[in-house]
Image (cartoon, rainbow, N blue to C red):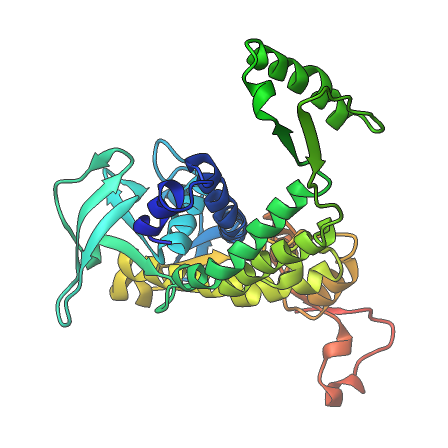
Length: 385
């Protein structure tokens, strides 16, 4: 609806529509759309906010100044979770997001202008952080810039809600009107001309009609000159189940836009582990991989990357791990020599022991070469690798 149609409807030919009614209708149409969009984006932002940003030096995970910057204090006003949620929310809402460095701290830009060039670096200007607009411009190599998709999912989502949002708004209004009382009070001309008419009418509405509408069983006494006709519509077809189904459809559409499984966005708990893996694979991993690549190439560059210095976003910590449920799997990983004890403890969310024996790799004789098995004794339970 454009502004011309809005004012014509609010003030023009349809005199029964007032500003309050119109605003309520428009608000109802967009409320569930915005709610579904916000829930989907918050789910992605909160999930990525839990990730550990690992820094590698010569191929070895290292916790130094860069690690602390990304995982604890990107800037004086935000911790790492708030910072990452801020960045991902901007990314999903605007389809692009920008991080700048100033005085050794990282800041998410709330707004900016990007000037594209084919064979030169893009230039970012009018960068706003909070209430401050920076006077200088930044080139592409000076910032961490990320674009979510070539096609703006949220913009496409707006079109799909245009007509469907109206059906939900209509269903809500029908639900509110269901089993309400409506009537027409006819007053003859002679009664309306009496000197005490306004006082009598006010008394009638407050002391007779109000108890009549609020009471379960009631009788409405009327004096001569007043005639009441009931025009209430009972038993509309709208039910809470029908309304909930329509609202769920909007959440499902928002989930599709950001590749969130239907069951997860609707809060179902059946097979949640399998659904969560699907969510991580198709919704979270593409974003974290792209962010890791962009951060590495801007913070380190080719020369440092070739030395084994880079940033990686670890999504393993997103899922809750029950160490008792993983006992058998942990034993297999240890006995096959794939991980040492410290590596397993880290993956299970515990701290590393950091001793000589906890950093060794062990393997059972069951994994030895077949031709060597005949030469091994049966009394030895395993061999250290």
